[in-house]
Length: 251
Image (tube, rainbow, N blue to C red; front, side, top):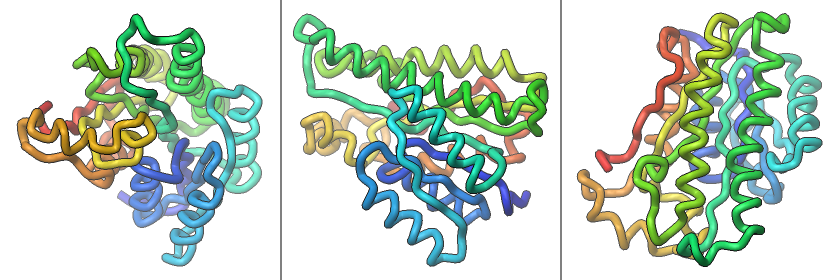
């Protein structure tokens, strides 16, 4: 089914899974807003790549852990594209490997502010624009969870796992809340994916170190996750809401 002209906003869209979603969506016909928090060059380069391929895209700055930034980001999409049909809640952070008894308040506050509160704030703004109860024409939201939500990540980052567990619960609750308002809400749980997030958490060699714990004996690629996200956004998933799709190689 055609998606030509539909507008998609992807948070954390300048790299990794977010960038893969942006590229795949643009190729399918979406007009794409690429959100970034600090790496303007990466976001602008991605938007330029989409435009060079005949698509429509623009980069928009915004820290999802800051309410004013979230509101401004959505208003920028309103101004540029005039509508919002699809939203991917992808932005998130991980931290250094640590036990819970070593974690500071500052670390925990940052983790929950960005991964949980930020995701809820963004979904709030998306629903305001999509819900038929608020004059919208419907839409689709996909949240990025993690296999850590079910595994717990002991000895690494239980706080990150807990934040993604919250995303799972939020996905189910919001999906049921807006199911009769034309808005579908689903999530994808990636497993070990070859992206920069491992290095940002101080473990650049993590993928290689735990590859053999995956039943398929390999890491996933960002594009493999993006395909699941695009399906959930699409009309082909029109009767799917409140679902969480594992893209984890069986882990």
